[in-house]
Length: 269
Image (cartoon, rainbow, N blue to C red):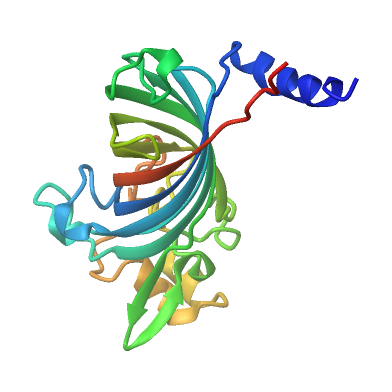
C-alpha cells in the first residue's frame, strides 16, 4: 500500500502525455527583437526593430509535441517616412507590447534528450496558439509623451460616423517556427521567428478615415488631437487615413535558452 499513492501520481503524470516515462519540463529565457507590420510599415523595417525579452515554461509531452506558456515584452514602432510607397502623412508611433501566450509546438524530427526517445538532437519546428497582449501607441511631441488612443485621432467616440474607441487589450494568433538544438541533457537552444496575427488595425493608431478637424479641435483633445491626426495637413474629411480591412501584425525574433528540469521518476517495485 505504501507504493499506491506514488504509483497513482506517476500514472496521472504519465497517461496524459502518451506514456513517456520521463517527459520533461523546461524553463527558458528569451532574448531577441520585436517589430511590426501595419499602416505605417507594409513590411518590417529593420531600423524600427527593438530589443525584446521573455520567459517560457514548457511541457514536452512526447518527442514531437510540446506545450508552452510564454510571457514576452517588446517594443514596436513605425514611421511612414520610412516607406517610399506611403503618402507623406507625417504619422508615427511607438508602443510597448506585453504578451501572455500559450502555444503548441510540433517538431518535424523526433527530438529529445532522454534515451527512451531515441531522438535527434536537432529539429525544425513550427508553433501556433493563442496570445493575449496589451499595447498603447504613443508619440513624443515637444519633449512630452502623448497616448494616441486618448487623442481620438480618427474622431473615435466624438465625430459622427467615426468608429468607437479601440481596446488596448487584444487577442492575437501566434504563428511561427524555427530550429531546436539539444546542447546537453540540461539545456536546449531554440532559434525562432514568431508572427502575431492581431484582430485590430490600430497597433499604430491608424486604421480608418480622416475626421472633421473642426470637431476634433472643439473636442477634449483640442488642437493637439487635430495635429496628431494630420501633422502634414494632407488629409481631407472622410479621406483614407488607414486601411481598416488590413489588420496589423507584430513579431518576435530571437533565441530561447531553456533548462531541462528532470521529470517524475516512478517508484521501483
